[in-house]
Amino acid sequence: MAADGPQIRRLAALAGEMVVVAGYCEADGDTRYNSVVCVNGDGVLGNHRKVHQPLREDASYSSGDRFRAFDTPVGRLGMMICYDKAFPESARALALDGAQIGVCVSAWPGSRTSPAADLAEDRWKRRFDLFDRARALENQIVWLSANQSGSFGSLRFVGSAKVVDPGGEVLADTGVTAGMAVADLDVAEVLRTARRSMAHLRDRRPEAYTYPAGAFSA
Image (cartoon, rainbow, N blue to C red; front, side, top):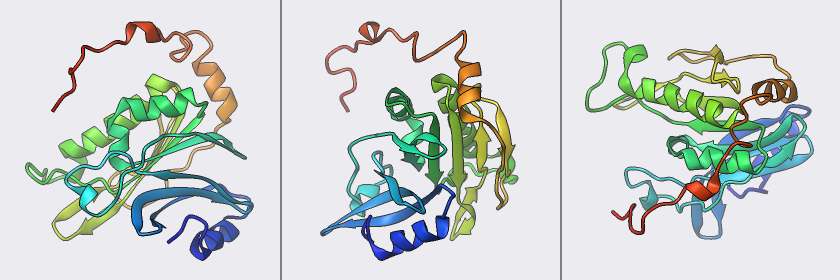
Protein backbone atom coordinates (compact mmCIF):
# COMPACT_ATOMS: atom_id res chain seq x y z
CA MET A 1 0.00 0.00 0.00
CA ALA A 2 1.08 3.59 -0.53
CA ALA A 3 2.19 5.78 2.36
CA ASP A 4 -0.66 8.18 1.54
CA GLY A 5 -3.13 5.48 0.49
CA PRO A 6 -6.66 4.85 1.78
CA GLN A 7 -5.56 2.26 4.36
CA ILE A 8 -3.17 4.70 6.01
CA ARG A 9 -5.77 7.47 5.89
CA ARG A 10 -8.23 5.13 7.58
CA LEU A 11 -5.67 4.31 10.29
CA ALA A 12 -5.14 8.04 10.89
CA ALA A 13 -8.87 8.60 11.24
CA LEU A 14 -9.10 5.77 13.78
CA ALA A 15 -6.13 7.15 15.72
CA GLY A 16 -7.87 10.45 16.48
CA GLU A 17 -5.99 12.18 19.30
CA MET A 18 -3.63 9.24 19.79
CA VAL A 19 -0.25 8.94 18.10
CA VAL A 20 -0.13 5.49 16.49
CA VAL A 21 2.79 3.65 14.90
CA ALA A 22 2.13 0.67 12.61
CA GLY A 23 4.12 -1.48 10.23
CA TYR A 24 3.09 -2.14 6.63
CA CYS A 25 4.39 -3.11 3.19
CA GLU A 26 4.94 0.20 1.40
CA ALA A 27 4.50 0.41 -2.36
CA ASP A 28 6.38 3.13 -4.22
CA GLY A 29 5.77 2.42 -7.88
CA ASP A 30 7.16 -1.04 -8.54
CA THR A 31 9.38 -0.90 -5.44
CA ARG A 32 8.41 -2.42 -2.09
CA TYR A 33 9.70 -1.46 1.35
CA ASN A 34 9.31 -2.91 4.82
CA SER A 35 8.01 0.28 6.40
CA VAL A 36 6.49 1.78 9.50
CA VAL A 37 4.22 4.82 9.61
CA CYS A 38 3.26 7.21 12.41
CA VAL A 39 -0.17 8.84 12.29
CA ASN A 40 -2.76 10.71 14.28
CA GLY A 41 -6.07 12.26 13.33
CA ASP A 42 -4.29 14.98 11.36
CA GLY A 43 -2.72 12.41 9.01
CA VAL A 44 0.76 10.99 8.48
CA LEU A 45 3.37 12.42 10.84
CA GLY A 46 6.34 10.32 9.74
CA ASN A 47 7.42 7.25 7.77
CA HIS A 48 10.47 4.96 7.93
CA ARG A 49 11.75 2.34 5.51
CA LYS A 50 13.79 -0.46 7.10
CA VAL A 51 17.47 0.12 6.42
CA HIS A 52 19.21 -3.03 7.70
CA GLN A 53 18.11 -6.28 6.08
CA PRO A 54 19.36 -9.62 7.43
CA LEU A 55 19.03 -13.09 5.94
CA ARG A 56 18.23 -12.05 2.39
CA GLU A 57 15.31 -9.82 3.22
CA ASP A 58 16.57 -7.78 0.27
CA ALA A 59 15.14 -10.49 -1.98
CA SER A 60 11.67 -9.16 -1.09
CA TYR A 61 12.21 -5.53 -0.10
CA SER A 62 14.33 -2.59 -1.12
CA SER A 63 16.31 -0.92 1.64
CA GLY A 64 15.66 2.47 3.16
CA ASP A 65 18.56 4.91 3.29
CA ARG A 66 18.03 7.24 6.23
CA PHE A 67 16.92 7.78 9.81
CA ARG A 68 14.96 10.96 10.47
CA ALA A 69 13.09 12.27 13.52
CA PHE A 70 9.87 14.24 13.25
CA ASP A 71 7.59 16.23 15.53
CA THR A 72 4.44 14.73 17.07
CA PRO A 73 2.01 15.88 19.78
CA VAL A 74 3.81 13.62 22.30
CA GLY A 75 7.33 14.77 21.45
CA ARG A 76 9.90 14.50 18.69
CA LEU A 77 9.95 10.87 17.58
CA GLY A 78 12.12 8.55 15.50
CA MET A 79 11.31 5.07 14.21
CA MET A 80 13.13 1.92 13.18
CA ILE A 81 12.28 -1.66 12.33
CA CYS A 82 13.58 -4.84 13.96
CA TYR A 83 17.24 -5.41 12.91
CA ASP A 84 17.76 -1.63 12.65
CA LYS A 85 18.08 -1.50 16.43
CA ALA A 86 21.08 -3.85 16.42
CA PHE A 87 23.12 -0.96 15.04
CA PRO A 88 23.86 1.84 17.52
CA GLU A 89 24.23 4.28 14.64
CA SER A 90 20.50 3.99 13.91
CA ALA A 91 19.28 5.28 17.26
CA ARG A 92 22.17 7.76 17.52
CA ALA A 93 21.23 9.30 14.17
CA LEU A 94 17.68 9.77 15.44
CA ALA A 95 18.86 11.22 18.76
CA LEU A 96 21.16 13.67 16.98
CA ASP A 97 18.15 14.71 14.90
CA GLY A 98 16.42 15.63 18.14
CA ALA A 99 14.38 12.49 18.81
CA GLN A 100 13.07 12.37 22.37
CA ILE A 101 11.29 9.07 21.77
CA GLY A 102 12.53 6.07 19.83
CA VAL A 103 10.03 3.51 18.56
CA CYS A 104 11.08 0.12 17.20
CA VAL A 105 8.59 -2.39 15.79
CA SER A 106 9.81 -5.94 15.24
CA ALA A 107 9.11 -9.53 14.28
CA TRP A 108 11.97 -10.81 16.43
CA PRO A 109 12.04 -14.59 16.95
CA GLY A 110 13.74 -16.79 19.47
CA SER A 111 16.89 -18.63 18.50
CA ARG A 112 16.47 -21.18 15.71
CA THR A 113 19.85 -22.89 16.18
CA SER A 114 19.91 -23.23 19.98
CA PRO A 115 16.32 -22.70 21.13
CA ALA A 116 15.57 -22.58 24.84
CA ALA A 117 12.73 -24.73 26.14
CA ASP A 118 11.56 -21.68 28.08
CA LEU A 119 11.28 -18.77 25.62
CA ALA A 120 11.82 -16.33 28.48
CA GLU A 121 15.35 -17.74 28.82
CA ASP A 122 16.12 -17.71 25.10
CA ARG A 123 19.38 -16.06 24.06
CA TRP A 124 17.71 -14.09 21.27
CA LYS A 125 15.20 -12.70 23.75
CA ARG A 126 18.12 -11.57 25.90
CA ARG A 127 19.60 -9.80 22.88
CA PHE A 128 16.26 -8.16 22.10
CA ASP A 129 16.00 -6.83 25.65
CA LEU A 130 19.63 -5.75 25.76
CA PHE A 131 19.34 -3.72 22.57
CA ASP A 132 16.20 -2.00 23.90
CA ARG A 133 17.86 -0.94 27.14
CA ALA A 134 21.17 0.02 25.53
CA ARG A 135 19.59 2.18 22.81
CA ALA A 136 17.59 4.08 25.44
CA LEU A 137 20.51 4.56 27.82
CA GLU A 138 23.26 5.48 25.37
CA ASN A 139 21.07 8.19 23.82
CA GLN A 140 19.11 9.11 26.96
CA ILE A 141 15.77 8.89 25.21
CA VAL A 142 12.44 7.23 25.94
CA TRP A 143 12.33 3.91 24.10
CA LEU A 144 9.18 2.08 22.99
CA SER A 145 9.62 -1.47 21.69
CA ALA A 146 6.88 -3.57 20.08
CA ASN A 147 7.28 -7.12 18.85
CA GLN A 148 5.32 -10.00 17.42
CA SER A 149 4.29 -12.76 19.82
CA GLY A 150 3.11 -16.31 19.30
CA SER A 151 4.47 -18.53 16.54
CA PHE A 152 4.58 -18.83 12.77
CA GLY A 153 5.66 -22.20 11.47
CA SER A 154 8.86 -23.08 13.31
CA LEU A 155 9.40 -19.51 14.52
CA ARG A 156 8.55 -18.51 18.08
CA PHE A 157 8.42 -14.77 18.57
CA VAL A 158 9.71 -13.36 21.85
CA GLY A 159 7.06 -10.68 22.45
CA SER A 160 8.64 -8.51 25.14
CA ALA A 161 7.00 -5.21 24.21
CA LYS A 162 8.32 -2.62 26.62
CA VAL A 163 8.72 0.98 27.69
CA VAL A 164 12.25 1.98 28.69
CA ASP A 165 13.20 5.26 30.34
CA PRO A 166 16.27 7.35 29.38
CA GLY A 167 18.28 5.66 32.13
CA GLY A 168 17.76 2.24 30.56
CA GLU A 169 15.24 1.12 33.19
CA VAL A 170 12.27 -0.92 31.98
CA LEU A 171 9.05 0.73 33.14
CA ALA A 172 6.65 -1.79 31.62
CA ASP A 173 7.14 -5.14 29.86
CA THR A 174 4.73 -7.74 28.51
CA GLY A 175 7.14 -10.65 28.84
CA VAL A 176 6.99 -13.30 26.11
CA THR A 177 3.19 -13.33 25.92
CA ALA A 178 0.89 -11.08 23.91
CA GLY A 179 -0.08 -7.88 25.67
CA MET A 180 0.38 -4.14 25.96
CA ALA A 181 3.15 -2.40 27.90
CA VAL A 182 1.78 0.79 29.47
CA ALA A 183 3.64 3.50 31.37
CA ASP A 184 2.75 7.08 32.29
CA LEU A 185 5.61 9.58 32.02
CA ASP A 186 6.38 13.18 31.18
CA VAL A 187 8.79 12.87 28.24
CA ALA A 188 10.39 16.31 28.58
CA GLU A 189 10.86 15.91 32.33
CA VAL A 190 12.42 12.45 32.23
CA LEU A 191 14.84 13.60 29.52
CA ARG A 192 15.76 16.68 31.52
CA THR A 193 16.39 14.57 34.63
CA ALA A 194 18.46 11.99 32.77
CA ARG A 195 20.64 14.62 31.08
CA ARG A 196 21.10 17.13 33.88
CA SER A 197 24.62 15.97 34.73
CA MET A 198 25.81 13.16 32.45
CA ALA A 199 24.59 14.24 29.01
CA HIS A 200 25.77 11.68 26.48
CA LEU A 201 24.87 13.66 23.38
CA ARG A 202 26.40 16.86 24.73
CA ASP A 203 29.62 15.14 25.79
CA ARG A 204 30.31 13.44 22.46
CA ARG A 205 33.75 13.95 20.84
CA PRO A 206 33.08 13.36 17.13
CA GLU A 207 36.63 14.33 16.15
CA ALA A 208 37.91 11.25 18.02
CA TYR A 209 35.63 8.79 16.23
CA THR A 210 37.76 7.91 13.23
CA TYR A 211 38.17 4.57 11.50
CA PRO A 212 41.06 3.10 9.49
CA ALA A 213 40.47 2.96 5.74
CA GLY A 214 38.93 -0.37 4.78
CA ALA A 215 38.26 -1.33 8.41
CA PHE A 216 34.74 -2.50 7.64
CA SER A 217 35.28 -4.22 4.32
CA ALA A 218 33.58 -7.60 4.02
